[in-house]
Image (cartoon, rainbow, N blue to C red; front, top):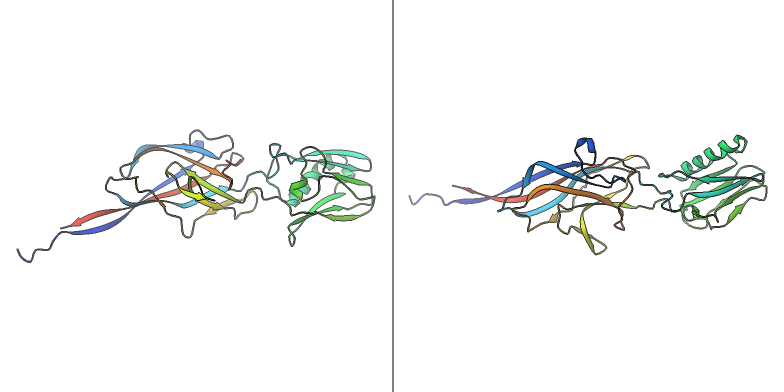
Amino acid sequence: NKYQMADRPVIVKNEISILASSDPTAGALNVRNSGSRFDVDFNEEIVVPRDAKNITISLSESSVWNSVPNISASLGNNHVLITIAATPIDCIIPDGLYTPSELSASINFIVNNTNPAYNGYITLTPEYSTNKVILNFNAAVACQFDLSVANSMATLLGFTATNHINGGIIESQRGTAVAQFNNVNTFLLHSNLVSSGMTYNGIASQIVCNIPINAAPGELIFYQPPAPPQISEPNMNGRRIQNLTFWITDESNNEVDLSAETWSVRVKISYDSVLILR
């Protein structure tokens, strides 16, 4: 038939979504004590067709708690020695993620347990216009805030590692440097789903996407990239996936302490296939 139409190839867009959680009760395996890395096994393997073209990996969404400690024994910044009216009060701050106001409350919790009458004599307040911390001596009593001790929080607060005193008067002292409460600026999501992944400052380490920290301490970071990076995986066709590993690091590629909080991601494998219309 001279009017018979020739076969016509049509490009079909395909997606495979993978939802993974670090929750052991939901099936996560080999979860790190810090909660930053876990494995998942699939009861039905994921198969990328052999004829798949233009294969990419991307992050659709993630849910991660903003819980990485900025004060801890391992960071070596959890200590200040306070003296009020000749009474020394050794303050060892529990590991945690603190704002200046929350740190001030934690210090005064220890002070209150030593002598309730001294509660509030020394406080810390943030000065957002300069990103510095203000050390307040709120009573006309001889007080010392000694940051020369071991594991001092001097750098965190932006103060010199010396003994800060008030001379028995009510006064406030401003830190000499910008406070360093943001020890982690962004999260990097990694997975062995990608071969090399994105590069960060020129280094490839199986990065799928960065997750900006856009929630307050202790709150959930829910992130849906408005324009997800598409990680090209041209050699992935024919791959059969039975298990995967996911992990989160800071911008220096160090695995972070998520305080054992569970987190989840949804990643997507996209590819083209050719359908022949006859």
